[in-house]
Amino acid sequence: MADAELGRIHSLREPIAKRREREGKTFDTSHPLAQAIIKGWKTGPKKGSPVDCFVISPDFELMGRQLVNEFFKESWAKKLRDEENYLIFLKEALDGKQPGLGNIILNSEVSSQEVLDVFQTPMVGYKDYTVVVIDTRVFENGGTLTVDIETGRADADGAFLLFDGDSELPMDEWVPKEKRLDYAWIEPDETGQLTHRFDRGAFFRLGATGHHRRNEKGSTNAFKARISVTEYPQVESLEKEEPESDEHISEVPLNELRLVLDKAQPSQEILDAFRAPGEGYQDYTVVSIDTTAFAGSGTLIIDIRVGDADISGSFDLFDGDTELPTEGYPDDALTSAWGIRPGEAGKIRHRFAQGSVFKLGATGDWYGEKGRINAFHAKISVKEN
View 1: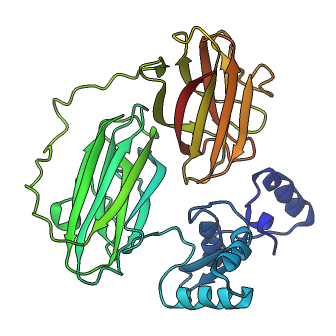
View 2 (view 1 turned 180 degrees about the vertical axis):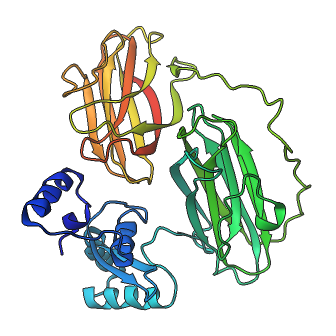
C-alpha cells in the first residue's frame, strides 16, 4: 500500500478521501499497524523522509527505521556492501538498539550532541511532552549526564524533566521527585540545566512541555538542548530549590525581536519557531535586522538551521519598509531560502550598497500540515565589502 493511503502526503488526503467515498471503500487508519507506520514517519532526525523499512514488534512497537535517501550513502561511507549494511540494521533493531529512531546516542568518541525542537503548552491536562530519548548504555562504569537548555524568545515558559528510559511519563500537574531524575523550569530566552549521575549507562528520556499555568493553552516555544556525558566522577550538586507554587511569578512581556548589528557586534544569533500557514498563505515569524551602522556596502548573511519537528521551513528577506504578505508568493522578497527540511541547514545572502533595516520572515513550508510548529536557529551577520 502506498504511503499516501495512510495520509503521509497532506495534499493528497482530500482527493483520496473523495475517491474512497466514490468507490464505497473505507480504510481504518486507527489500526495499530497503521498507527505504528504513521508514528514512524514522525520519528527520527529526518522526519518526513521516504522510508524503506520499518521493524515493528508483535506488539506494534517501532524497533527500527531505515531511510531510502540515507541508506546508500551510509553503505558507501562505511565501505560496506548494501546487503551487509542492511543486515547490520536488522540485527541492531532486533537487539533493541532502535536504529533510525532518532535517539541521541552518546559514547566515548561522541560524548555530546545537540537537539533543536519545539515544546507546546497542553490544550487539555497538564503535560504535552516533546520527548528526546538518550542512549548512554556504552558507559558501563557510569558517569554524569548533563543537559544544557536554551529556550526561544516566544512567550511560553518551558518545563523540562529527565526520566529513566523505562519510566512511564507522568501526566500529573506536579511531578514528585520520586518520579523524575531532575527538573528545570525555564522562562523564554533563558537557559537552564539538568544533571544526573548514573552508576551504569542506560536509556534516559528528556520531556519538554509548556508550563500549563504560566502559558496560554497551545502556545509554543523553541528550545535547544546540548546533551553530554562525562565519565569521570563529579561532586554532587546542591539540591535545587523548586517553586512550590506559581504564585508571585512575574509576568514576562512579549517583545518583538529587533537585532542591531554594528562594527562592534557584527553578528548575533536567535532561537525561535515558525508555523505552517497552509498552502498558498504566509504566517511569518518576523525578525527586524538593523544594519544602518554600516555606512558603506556589505553582505548580510543568515545561516539557518531548522529543528527536528515534522515541518520544513521557508525564509524570506525583505526591505524594512515592505509590508509582508499574508498569502501568495512573496514577490517583493529580496532573496529567499525555501523548503529547508527538518534537521537541515540553509543560507541567505544579500549584498547592500548601504546599511538599512531588513525583515526576515520565517514560515512553514506550504506542503506541510497547517498549524504545525518547528524551531529554527539563525546566525545573522554582516560582512563589510
